[in-house]
Image 1 (tube, helix red, strand yellow):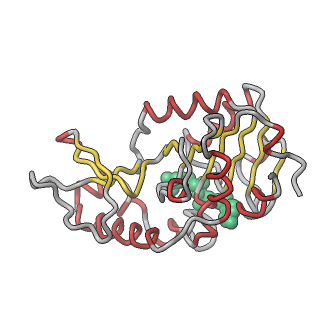
Image 2 (cartoon, protein in one colour):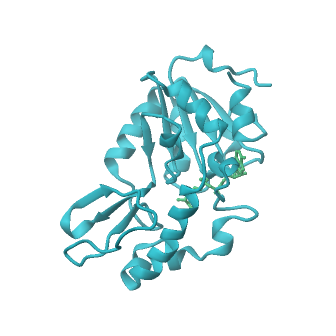
Length: 231
Ligand code: APR
């Protein structure tokens, strides 16, 4: 049972990673059964792979969209969405691209690494939501391939999203990190920004992580159970 309770704080940021969606059946990236154990990201999740063979990248990306479309938000997503509901002082900064926070009803979600459900054509300055499973076509009418709007390895994060997320993180009095291994920067750095401003930091993760030592409280369990214990 957690001593730290949401009701004792005024401004809360939920900082989430792949472990947030593990209970929904979506594989994490690292650890046993992780995505990067099975797939070499240089072949599927970087701009050079897309430039080399967009159809090959879309095959992988299409499969991920299908897999996620078949999954449902879990109890942890619902708890967060209920806390965010209509409360501008509660927000979500996520590394996840699955859109499950939004499907659970959460507003104020900042997607640091983009979304499976957005596509773009950089040369035409086009970006749009697309929930078709399967995609009707991988090419825009101009003939250019749609590019998944995901921050791939080697990409820069969108500065407008970073700035908006950091404004929330630097202004909160409680940051709850859920299901992230804390090894991918600059996102891994963000909880430190909250700590420097005096926020209370809670880590929810069944395992110790690279960043565990910065947290005031570490709840060693699954996202749903540990979030429920903070109500
Ligand atoms: N509840 C909470 N945490 C869990 C659960 C669960 N049920 N199951 C696993 N975890 C934890 C694991 O212990 C691990 O620490 O979730 C974490 C998942 O770590 P990663 O797979 O590294 O995911 P993440 O930290 O989100 O990766 C960051 O790396 O590949 C890039 O862009 C990708 O956004 C991703 C970034």
